[in-house]
Image (cartoon, rainbow, N blue to C red; front, side, top):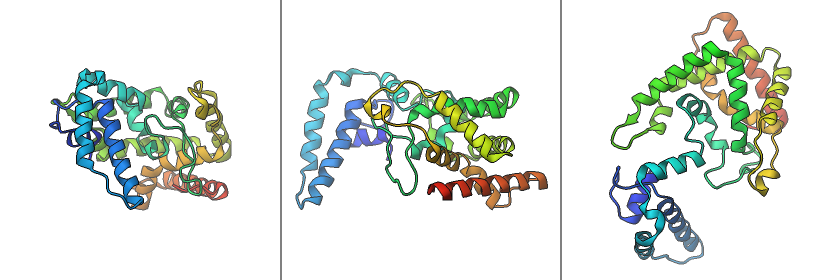
Length: 269
């Protein structure tokens, strides 16, 4: 269930444009779910309906309840990086499992598998990808991403269905084109890997809190980032790819180097 639909069902509203995605709704819905699960683990039963009733009563008098749908959506979008233009948003979509949710901090949610990233890596990653793509190719892909975002725009809600867009074949095609540009630039894998790590590290904005200040971008983060970013191209290669021979050789060499690096760093994604 989407966050918007959940906020409606949890607090008694109707879905759609008449039920704004308000910060209090989302937070209270999450708390009710957390409280019920916590009680169950201790052999207790939470009166969820009573909690939802109290939440509705609270929200009727909460100042944020007066926020318009567009205002709340914009504020949450900015907090989660969703205010990025379509092309940049499409580029970072594969990284979402590695990024902390709104209000979260980077950490090692599954240290044996992959290290969590910080949203502070995004400026450097986007700068590196733009450099690898070149201006003309970047503009072409930007045009395609904007057209795709328009195709998934909901007139009723005034926003793009990003989840639907991420599943579209054109989104995968954009990622595969970007992946081929990365492969071309990683002919000398080790040198380019160091370059990518340095570019991202150099573009990290100032930390906003103590948890961020204690976090630093390193080799394992770069490996996890590349594994996620290149997943669509890997899937295409597994199904045959349709590449010419030189491209096939380059793609296979890239993934061999990346997988060796991932094995050495004990990272998987």
